[in-house]
Length: 375
Image 1 (cartoon, rainbow, N blue to C red):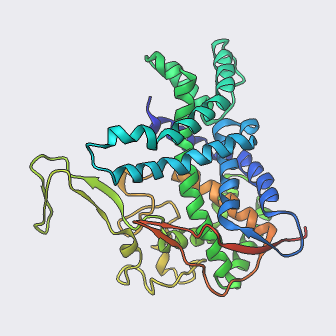
Image 2: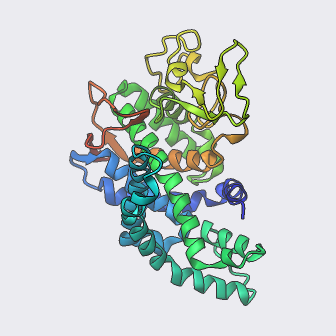
Image 3: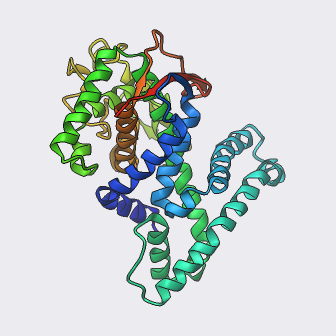
């Protein structure tokens, strides 16, 4: 069963899912950022992660399960432990890995089993409904996965365990990267010129007026300044210092156009952070231009999700992240809701990100002071 096909279904369905995503963003943001009209502190990373987890899982598993806090915690813990166990195993000699892997990955398996337990009843219920030729099918990732499994020739694909694990893997790929990007954007908005934030807020208000106050695809496409601020943040603070990684698979190795000889098995990639800060590509590259006033750093008006050799936080070519279109819509809805409904106190200095190897993480303990804007 191709994960690409399910991601393609997600991309095609995103316009119809925007009202659903917005509904969950609104409910969760009110809980995590509060409705208090007085100034109060919010931990950016934790709040953003929870909102994105809720909104994403509304699309992945439906409203009831996405609001099950225990299920969310299990999925988030697995998503945190999964890459950590991989990093630990890479530090161990290859011959010893089969011996220690069961111990190191045991917490991963425990959380995965709990996640399956939460999803299994709903998967079985939907499979029974599908068998009965029910026409009232939910429009979410779980249902698309079940439908794809029904079309498969492999009986194992229809196992609730396999379906749940496919959903869990998708959650991992979505929540982490979206949390990193959005946390950085919020911190950038808090430290940018307050005039830029006001411009973005006014753009959202104008878009709503011109769109009959409907949160849909048309409105999302009108948020050009917000999209520009997202792109600038991703350019300067992409979550990986290198990207577009490829391994040499030719047994004879590879010779680059400039004559460098790369042996079989060598891993190569692009220096993303260096390219994104190259003065020959971006004028005044180190300085962020959130609303794209100069136009120079927006690479000819390209959008947040447009990739090129000069801008590739999502990869490049046919292997570029296929889920970036869904993520872009979700992030724009989340950021638009926060900017529209909350004052964010200006921070004179931008809190520095954290480096973990070649990964650039937003500061997990950074806070912003916010207050609800009276309607």
